[in-house]
Amino acid sequence: MSSGDCEGLQEDLERLYYWCVVNKLSLNISKCSVMSFTRSKQPVVFPYTVCGNLLARVSEVRDLGVIFDSRLTFIPHVDQLVLSVSKVYGFIIRNCRYFTHTSTFLCLFNALIRSRLDYGSVAWNPIYNCHRQRIESIQKRFLKYLVWREDGVYPVRGSEYGLLLNRFGVSSLEVRRRVLAVKFLYNVVNDITDCPSLLAMVNFIVRRQNSRSQELFYLRTPRTNLLLQSPIEFMCRTFNTISAVCDINFDTLPCIIEVLLCSLECEQ
Image 1 (cartoon, one colour):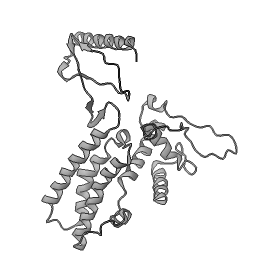
Image 2 (cartoon, rainbow, N blue to C red):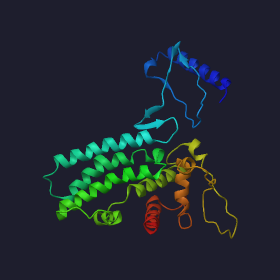
Image 3 (cartoon, one colour):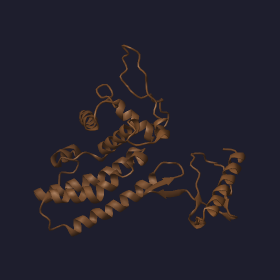
Image 4 (cartoon, rainbow, N blue to C red):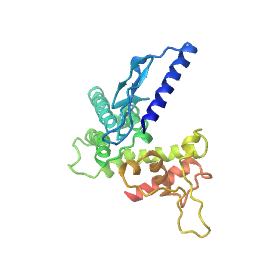
């Protein structure tokens, strides 16, 4: 990004401000800020202003409940998410200790905790395995608590997580994020989610006759974890694992999800 780009953006800000004035819309400048999304150690810093007021420069911003950081690692969002759902988990344990049915606890967990862990995951899906484990540990701890409620003892330390999932008929949060990613991709490709700019980023493969490759989407060879876990790459890569048996333009979404779940179970 050059100084000319910065000056052009400053001109756009001025035009936006005058457009608000003409249309009698008030602009709360105290809530406006500047953030540069870059992984460069020396980003271009330009003093942007609106109506002569210098805009504060920040390294994090919350948008629709998701915290974006300047390097797009989403680590601050994961930190805040784990902290908030841990408090809700404690609230459930303290206030529902006299409940007797396991199904009631599962309903509370799904409504108050899992819904938060799923929200916006297509955008903030963790890049690093350590953060995936932090999120997964919340559900794992809850399932161990359910075992204690039913059996009177906690599972043996180091017991298999898959056994807990099978016992209570739930999927891991990692599997749920993959399912949500494929659902979102299905909606974009089939125009259920009307977003041409996103659809333009999806690259289809036109296979030759008798081609051995069964993949539907073209993906670049990832050189970094950031590219590997980016939303479009993650969605398309996940669907490519089942593209040999599913047609995203013909099969129904429930059918695709069923095949995906079977495929993920085989991997585990």
